[in-house]
View 1 (cartoon, rainbow, N blue to C red):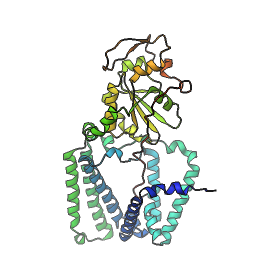
View 2: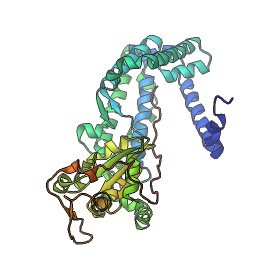
View 3: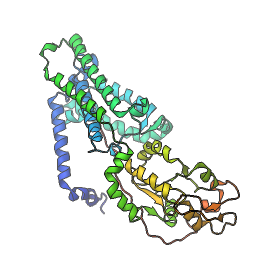
View 4: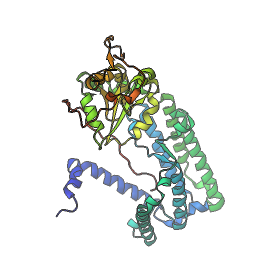
Length: 413
């Protein structure tokens, strides 16, 4: 019996083996540089907490800041879509507690998880023991997490960035972070001079050129600015408009109903009609959102798991829903579809037997609700919540799940 599906595990490697070779080279190079920098030595690592040697702070924070300015410069000039960069969701309180635990462990053991791997690779006993302890801790956490699950998921803020916290433009935040980093580097050097008797006159002057380059790149990103939704749409309009024209993204009411009945799918329903029309009639579970307010939902939609989430936008016909679809496509939201024919077609499909819902003549293409109702009952009508098990409608399947983002590790861990 084949307990482990080795063939399935190796399939991605068979598809593109050069990718894994690149991964291996990058991983080896990263570990090699860390070892050459002394990051496999617990004494050197622990020295930062005594302000004698702050190499770890300068190297790690320098790498973070360099990656940040290059990432947002790439986004500004249009060669990278920041919305496709996975940002771990923020759980404030467990994050703070976890940071304290890791910090105390770093002080006592002289390693973080990443540097303990480097130390173990060079056959250092203390690094191997620290790494073993990390594995034991991971196992213990996995076995006891259910005892404090509520705390583990507390302080949830979703995909939170400094731009969201301070309400500042991306370029301004990037420049301020660069200045903060340079101030920290300056302070670190003087702490090393005071506590570690380091002679700053012997330090390479090339570091000033590096600092200046960071500032210049950050300023370039600030001047260019980040692309907005209209800029992003202009870059993808030709490809995406073809999908609209060929009706590859308009799903029939039957397919939407079947999707709502699929336990494996997380279907997000966005109703972009006016609040008045929404109150008269809307699908059960649909969220009313004005087109102007739709960008505020983008962070939450980006945080949804792409492997199981389908977002469906709807209006009275398809006019406003198509505008919403374009905006969400520009924001790189995966698996977005339009309800074909809108709410009017949905009611015509599922509400024919309801005497209280009366059809009326409306101008075509003006996104007007084509029915009158006895009262604003919203989702209380039967047509708003038909059972997937009672309806069998023929339709051409359109939904194809795309996986654009996935979590990835980073930092010292």
